[in-house]
Image 1 (cartoon, rainbow, N blue to C red):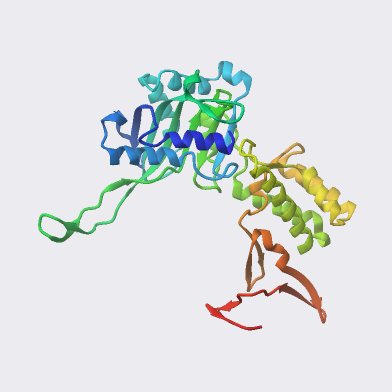
Image 2 (tube, helix red, strand yellow):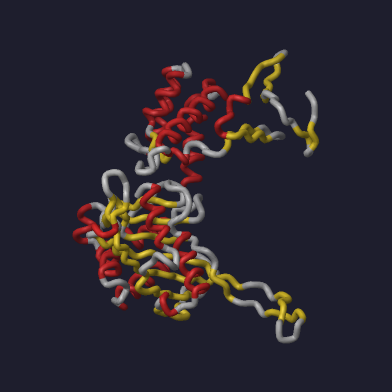
Length: 375
């Protein structure tokens, strides 16, 4: 799914747009024991309660693609024969009315909950009457012929609040308020099937993780029989290590700045096309930049070898896991310099009187502890 398609489904999760047929839930304690299960009709809820449920589901479609939102792709044989895919299809096709299928989903998720906190598993079904779009992008509602049926699952920690003082309107003062179990925003979740080219793609699902340092292998395998990619944070660290270990003396500020700027430029080009999928970068894209920077052939060969060892010869990395779109950081043991990502040119390195320096070009508006200073 591209950014525009995700946003279109996310907009569904508002009280005035949704067609949620039902919400089902399973409340689990820290020992993996089911405390309760329930089925709710969102139409029977009050407005504020409905908005809270929809806000939880909306969070599952939030975050950065390639970091928080991970593509899951089913092989053709999985679509034909796998129990994981068959379960997801049953949940979708029955609009969560099949009790045994819903229970089977809970039993796949519960063993993967490695936490002492209580957990609430929520799943909803929605039927989206997809508006037809003309070639110029205009919506023509009366020509709609596609209904996108999908399920959305959210796995939420339920945490015990601390006892505190709270206002009591009956006594017009503050009294002790007992601790209570409160639902937090989801840590994981998924959408099935994906919404692509105005229709359902049953060969794909979208998995959500709040923590970009975790890929939740056990959960992803239980739900999809799929090996998730390396977590975004670890992927970035691994790529940085490949550059450092292979480039050796060529691993200079100028080379890393060039890699950053070239990837950022490609990301900006991709960003202008809302229909484009997230940008992927392979080893050849990076080698092209290294060659332009004059990196020695031996070090470029070492980069390719280490890249293949770490990620695989045909690997494509998410561009957002290679560079930080919002900032460019230079760090020493005593100083950290953070620069806007598009102004890395303000920083340079230089040898002066035999000593290595990091120079920052000072423009207007220099402050020290909030005070404007003259240079």
